[in-house]
Image (cartoon, rainbow, N blue to C red; front, side, top):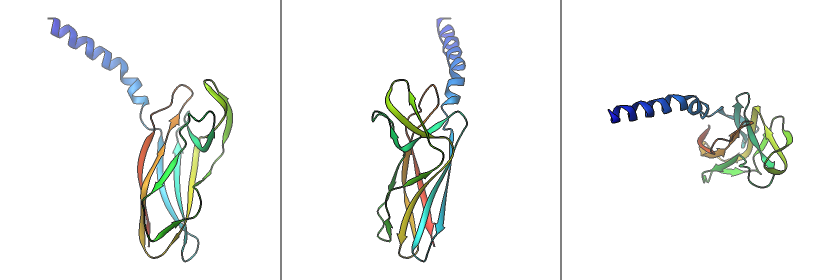
Amino acid sequence: MRVIKSMLLLLTILFAAAPSFAQMEDPTSWKYEVKKKSATEYQLIFHVTVKDGWHIWSTHPGGDGSLIAPSFNFAKNGNVKLKGDVTEKGAPVTTTMDGIDGKVIYLNGKIDYVENVTVTGATKITGTHTYQVCNDRMCLAPKDKEFSFDIK
């Protein structure tokens, strides 16, 4: 009888917590695009859409150094030369937040991150990017995603 009561208690706790687990789903969707600018120049575009109520930190998020900015790590490839840092395109929001010293910068809605590259020959550009999304109550754990761009 005690085992049954323990099982019922455990099931009750799990069902009560289910809505919280549902909120932990990643509120972003990513698409990757290559734009040819010249015979050897390309733009690698990371399109992200962030669901309403959520935001992603800017690549220069400000604050007290505790914020996790999006980062893009490209695998070594002898056919590819990166030209500068990844830039972001979107409507940044600059504000203050409780618990964080200084002004912070984030984006929401649709954002593009762009890396310009010089490429010699057909190749595949791969790597990972890391990002963190937050709403007005919490931040999700940082997430890593793999990416791949085919240059033909």
